[in-house]
Image (cartoon, rainbow, N blue to C red):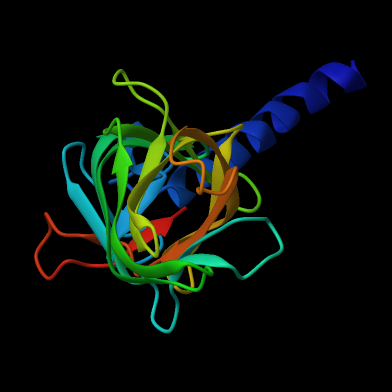
Length: 230
């Protein structure tokens, strides 16, 4: 009989605890307000969501250059003082996860070469745009570029040499991977390997591309705020 006397008191305590827990939740709370924010935000971490369809743009990070060298460890090849990246957002799910975009533009300018026999660089261009872009909020904030429906990621250099103008064509060999950085709002790519696919016999057999772009800005939003990966 003593057990039966204690049961009501225990039940009352449980109910009181539950009531206190419910009271601690703001009246305005809802499943939507408690849901995780998106992978990409503009202006601040956890800020305004980057919308599907928003345009993203980034120049070379201050004080950096884009390079296309003949080996992974050399400093011989083509160097470009300016470059511009542009993309359109395709998907921006709730974190944790990966946002996706279409890389619609990648241009280079003010390029020079330090290769014996090359007197000037007429152009450095990429082909088969657009490319797929995936930005993950996993550790290291990995970024991956992939070829689109037009084909493999390509690069073409047109060079003036002692022997006339030559064209060197390259295709991506392996993965094109980099990383994002929330401090500089940048995307960094290092020694992305391209193999020669056509052109003059004077062209190097390989090209290794490196560049850092930032700050990445959402140009569809007022003031073009910087983009964060959450």
